Length: 236
Image 1 (tube, rainbow, N blue to C red):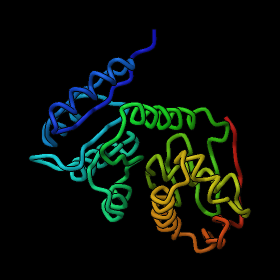
Image 2: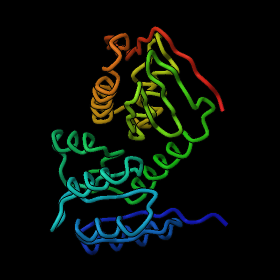
Image 3: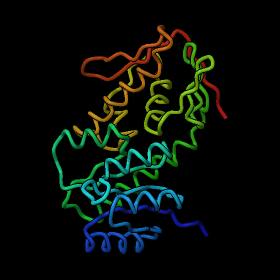
Image 4: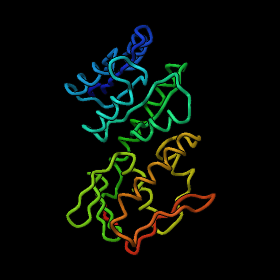
């Protein structure tokens, strides 16, 4: 029998939190509920979680701060924000921190579970890809370890950075269509996911700047192109 997937649920609304926990448990998840950000931080330190669902407005420590602390410990665990805020600036701030999804209240519990399942499928699916190593210019990119290396410099990528760079490498010196990348990595090609992808493209450009021969260029109205003088892939 497979072990249940563990979810850290941080929600300061007691009634909503209990309803969400019960619903997740009914869907066969092991959900731990915390009523404030400080309790959520302590729970994450002690436990091993497959995904975090964090309310943004919480006492003692808000969801953004908690997410930053979680990211400092673990680059890979998926994070979904729950919030009553719908301002673009707040949503983009969440994605900059490293959120995988962002749900504004009110929402249906079915929608939350759908998004959780979509993220977990994507995270688990990437582990089964055949290509585990790319050579791009002077860089070595290990897709399984999510590590980018040039000389003695080693950079650990986040899951989103690794997924996006893997797609770019698979289409090196070709156009990676924007909508294809969004639907492959973010599931949905809506405005907020598109802005989130732009943030990650900027991060990848910074990671790759040590080799001036490597570029990620915008192809207006179409997508992106990874320009590399050399690209070699190896399969498992």
